Structure formats: structure tokens, C-alpha cells
Length: 370
Image 1 (spheres, rainbow, N blue to C red):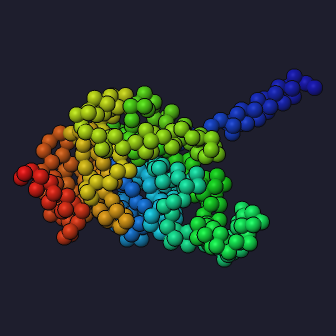
Image 2: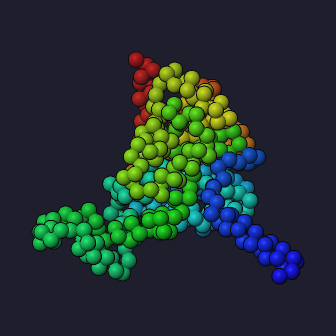
Image 3: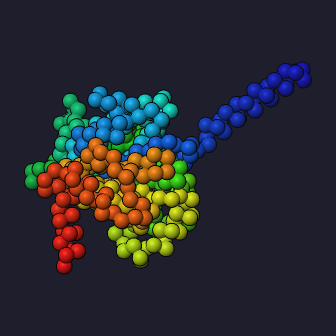
């Protein structure tokens, strides 16, 4: 063998080894972006496609045919696409399409994980509606249901008609197909398991629940890696893990519910640790309005968008570093470290009679008079 031939073989082998290493290396979803001119953030959707489409159109990121018209806008959805409503599947299909369209236009769609995505991936289906299961039914649904029952029931249970009726109520037709779709190999399970829990765009941190003191020293990449790693494990193996921890980023409610004086130092510490000016959270519904806390350092965007939570119609918009609320189609400047009276009144004037926000404002007015 000549030296030239030996060198060529070694070179080909080195290229092959390098290619194999690239395949074996873990892949990461990008979780930090700078220089974004416009960002739109939408909170919990809970299976209400019409409400979601309505808010995206009001923010001018999709047209009447649900096609992307947002250009270089970055759209952030902060989790809880799923449960309660009946059209979560259509919402995921829409977001999958918008991800591709936005990318081609120079923008981005960032679907973050909420606690309800994790619940579905782990098999906790307490909040899946009957209509949602129906959306997964295949022509073989009855046979798949029967086979699932036969594989799970004991010999005595198979003879018990009452037990069978109860089991079928808990595992309706479409249940088997739903579980397949949310498996690691399933279309939605594979898609969701690739998602981040936290993303930073410019000087803003977006996530579903919030950053608790327990996780204040963790960085974005660490949080996202831990979440994705646990979603690949059996649910029994992640007891106490970040994806089920009440203090974890998918579940923590302190930033939305704790008194501001009590948590102010922690919030300031989170901003400094993550190098941001705002933390945007969902998970805890507001009275139908994008709601600043801690002088705008924390911004709550779960406005109860779905009909199940009152049908609020608002989302958050950042033009570079300046925050606005798009409230029932009208852009309102979001108060940051200023009095909220003008903002609340302007939003209330856009509300229909007997809305959650109008009732909230009535209670607030009465409490100030006492």
C-alpha cells in the first residue's frame, strides 16, 4: 500500500469518525436571541383555537387564512396549549406551520412548555376534554380501545361489566391514538419534547410559571437541558424533578401571587442573574388583562384567553425594549414603574359588559372607597 493510498484511507476514516461524533452530539434548541425588533407573547390557550387565532390576527402576525404575515416578528407562546378545550390538536398543527413560515420570513415562533404539556407527555390526562379525545379518533378506535382493555384488565375485571364501563369512561375512543401521538415517537410528543421551558429575547425572559429562589442560580441552558432530559424518562423516575417541582419554572406562582415587598429582592436578583429587564410569565390567570407587577419587572400574560377561563383577549408586545398590551385589538402602552390607573381604565373601556376585567375594576373601586 502506497503512502498516498494509506493517507487517503486515514483521511476518509477521520471524516467518518467526525461525522459520527456530530450525529451523537446532543442537539440544543436556541434559547437566547438579540436584536429582535418586535416580539409578541401570548399566554395560556387551553384548547381554544378561535381565541388563539383571534389574538394572533389582532397582533398582525397571521392573516384571515391563518398564514404568517408577521415578517421578522418573534412570537412566543408561553405554554399550556393543551387541555380543557377541544382543539389543542389544531392549535399545535397551526403552530408547527407558523414555525416554518416565520423562519422563512426571518422571524421566529417559540413554543414554550407549560405544566399541562408535561402532564400530557407523562400521561396525566385529568384535564383532557372529551372533545379532545374525539379529535384523535381513528377508524379503528373501537378496536384499539378493546385491545387496550384486554391488555390492561385482569381475568376477573374482564368479566365485570361495571368495571368495563368505568374503564371505558376513563379511556374513551381516541385515548389510544392520543397516547401514541404524545409518545416519544409520536408527532406531538416528539415536537413538544424538543421545546424549551425558558427563552430570552433581547432583555426579556419568557417562561410559563416563574423563577423561584430554588432555581435562581440556574442559567437558561441548564434549565432547558434538565427539562428535556426528564421528559425522556419514565414518569416514575422524575419524582422531585424540575418538571414536577412546585418551585420549578413550569409550576412556580410566587412571582404572580406573593406580595411585592416580600419578593422584591428576589425579583431584582433574577433580573440581575439572567441579565434581563423583564420576566414574562403565564400560568396564573389575570382578570383578563396583561398585568405588570413589581413596577413592570414581572409581566403576567395569562389573560384567561380560552372560553374556559373567561375569554380575555389580550397579549403582550415589545417594540424593541418598550412593552405594550394589545387589548381587544387596540395597542395600549404598558405602565412600567408608573401608576396603572390610566392603563386599567383604557382597557376596561374596551371590554364587553360583565367581563372579568369590569368586575375586577368594580371590586377595586369599591375597596378604595372603603
